[in-house]
Image 1 (cartoon, one colour):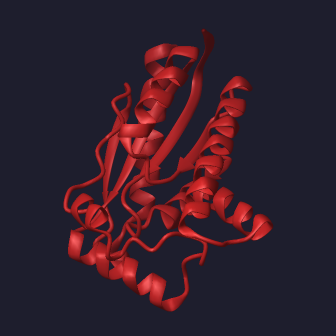
Image 2 (tube, one colour; image 1 turned 180 degrees about the vertical axis):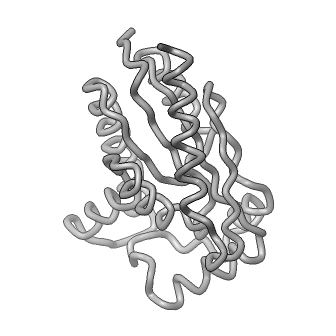
Image 3 (cartoon, helix red, strand yellow; image 1 turned 30 degrees about the vertical axis):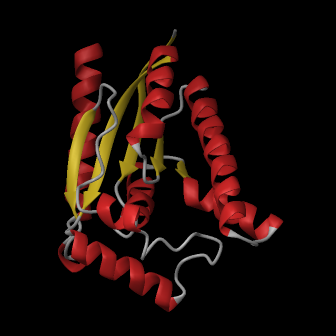
Amino acid sequence: MTTCTDTTVVLITGHPATGKTTLAHFLAQELSLPLILKDQIKESLLDTLGTSSTEWSRKLSIASWDLFHKQVENLLKANISCLVESNFNPIYANEHWKNLALKYKFQLIQVRCETEPDILLKRYRQRIKDGDRHVGHVDASEDKDFLETIKQHMEWLMVESDRISFDTTEFKQVNYLKIVQNIRNQISSRLKTTS
């Protein structure tokens, strides 16, 4: 096992349209951490390799997850803290993060963006309508499984971690600086415990 007790991964999760990416960029700047965005990787692949079908989009999504995981592990190998953002579905993500926790000793802080299902769906559909979402992504706005999934908050990854819930119902009232301080407090507390 690699010892890197002063290494932290801030993991931002939540359903689409809960404000994850906006929060991720803000935190990366305030905390001076490298940022890895899963959708940014996929969109680069889409721009390079083209868009064609739902099946193709899903294949590129699998490839982007693989690249994403390799980037995270490379930073952990180098004892570099980082911030990562995506909709981490525990069904697929638990095993990966459990394996990382076995190989590398690091602090994991999960930040889950949350809002009410009707607000989330309205934002999601508006983003598609406005063209703010890359055309290569699959539109799940009428998908029964998606509509059922967003009725509950994204589940936490089942890995030892600090957990912070972040309400993004009213974007104009979101206190980003408060969550920055919360994360700093979590990191400081961990450093004191391990020193």
